[in-house]
Length: 178
Length: 312
Image 1 (tube, rainbow over the protein chains, first blue to last red):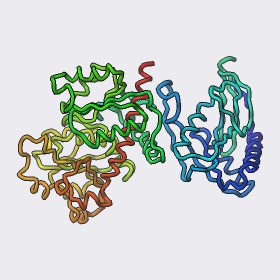
Image 2: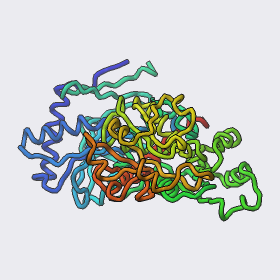
Image 3: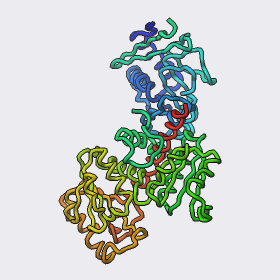
Image 4: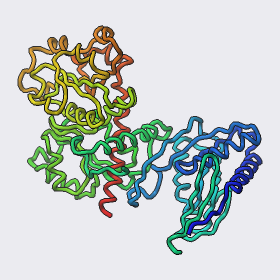
């Protein structure tokens, strides 16, 4: 079974809400950078950056981080672990970093991201934004600071984030049990 | 294509074009890694690699070692000069003894062509060829190709000439295979005595005229005269060789277009190319060295990934 959990309109509202929450904590973003995680956090990250620009006319420092070489399942999974590009053209040292990903599930990708960020310097702080927080099945003690939507899901469910142009829809797929 | 089709890297001849492309694409990511403030990633922290060198090497050995360390692998080094090989131990025994210490991968250079093929049939560890006699030197070809792509883009229909001692060169053979698999046109150029008799059967053009070849090509790979492998005299004198087949700055400037110059090192300055040429903007010799680490990281990473999926 496949059902929609977030429609375009809802994701649009979430973007506006998260932009407001971020501006509340980071002011003019002069010492803050958004860092979207490859590959699936990129479109969400770009949308947040665009929304902040649209609402507050602030050009936020933005980069893209790949965590492949820091993942803990290399040589432990049959899935290929191939890297994506890193785009960071600013100094991480002493910056306030906001990591952005689409779905937070086991937390292992974020753990890898925390390690990967440190390869570029020591940020003064790191926060996490996620569009979807799958509340259960966390395997490491990591929690998001800003969340689009909390959902309850079973371990066999699959959450799919569909971007079409700049619009986003989120599905939950529960085929395996139904 | 997401995994290499091979468990070992024995030569370029045995791997597919998709394998080459996967290695080169992944190398781009590793080049980014080695330019970070912290140049090390933890991917291979549970992998032990033995660098087994039965022949002298400076840059290949250092390059592999750096690549291994930047992937967080544990490494052990072995060179034949200071080992039991001197006491008469066979290749298989030597390597089996090293493997008994739980080594996952073996990077080997050996003077005998085919030593790696032989070993791959007898041991379980992943084997990477770091040069076997006058046969192949696959990682050199991959890093040459990577450096070329970086400089002149897609190699399809690009013209590359390999100049010099083709007969004794493992770099030449690996480069020919690699460039051809990526769609480039390859020519070899050198004195008749230094070109293997049936080299044209590999589908390469053959020339004995350096100026003509440089006018023809987009890039020239200048090979080292391997005096240590030459038991007989193949040309009257080094001076004569360098007059006919050495690239000088005036020669380079007199060409109708700008070409890229490569050299796998170590350079005999004043023989294959003059210092002026080696240090000019058209030379990518030091880029080749830097890219060597990234390409070898890519090879080690992809083979390590492959190693586990076999076990499962």
